[in-house]
Image (cartoon, rainbow, N blue to C red; front, side, top):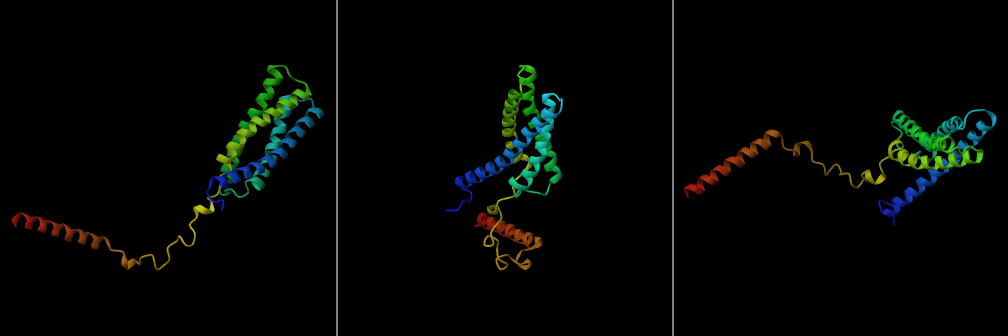
Amino acid sequence: MGHGSSGGGRLHALVRELAKFGAVGGAGLLVNLGVFNLVRHVTDLQVVRASVIATAVAIAFNYVGLRYFAYRDSDKSGRTREMTLFMLFSAVGLIIENGLLYLATYGFGWDTPLQNNVFKFVGIGIATLFRFWSYRTWVFQAMPSREAVPSREAVPSREAVPSREAVPSREAVQGAESLLAEESRRAELRQRVG
């Protein structure tokens, strides 16, 4: 039984997409947390600023991974549009991720390195749900499936396509309509008389 358009086939494709997205996202998570902790360790930047830098580095890393691994078979015709939407949705994800960290750090005063990493991780998780939905829906749009492309058997053969001579001209159609209308009037007249 083929996967075709069955529910099992779509579920298999979604699971495969999630696995690829997860692989890129997992590597991006390591980049994000690694850069975040490195910046926090070697600079005096505030926690959210360090997090924004780490998120920006991870966004660049993730774009390359998503474009050339997870969604390599998606439509590549509109790269400018793709990049614009990717950056827009990534910025929203950045705000979600770092907004949670900001709230925890400055709203609740949870500012130890462990707390910073926990809330950064939770923020990444929430932002990832948004990013998965937005990237697959708007950014990396799927190519039409092979099922949507007619098979060779579905395309009529040259013999099945009427030749130009077999297609009546406009004048011929109008003439036939006139003859039918005239014949209809004569039949109506005969019926009245007869």
